[in-house]
Image 1 (cartoon, rainbow, N blue to C red):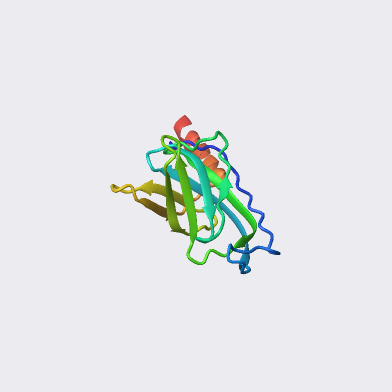
Image 2: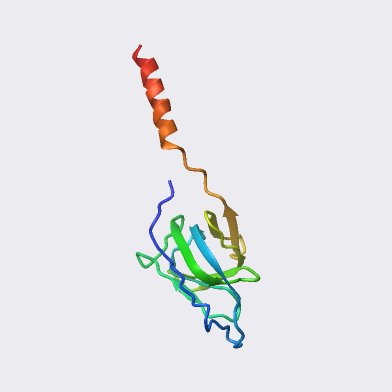
Length: 154
């Protein structure tokens, strides 16, 4: 079972005055994303950052315990007015073992997805997106368990 640690990234970008380094105003959209990031790089991460464009500043996602272990998942929430990432988001990881960094480009954020970050055999960044398994209905599970218990008692 994959372990989870908690982190919350509540992005509060104000639409007024939001500009890229070039001074042009950035298009925004209202978002409410609850995602899961999964670290399958094989290396612990000491710093996690995102940005919506090459010329934008990095925004750090706070890691609860200071590191994000390999094979761990963390929940990430983005809410409010966010810049539109025309070419997808960039995700940068700084690795705890050497302070080296890798950048994943074109990452598509969405609600209720698992984004798995990995490195291929050439140590190049790879990201995959999957939808979490649907949650089972507890009432149905209890009902099935009750029926099974009734049958075994006879």
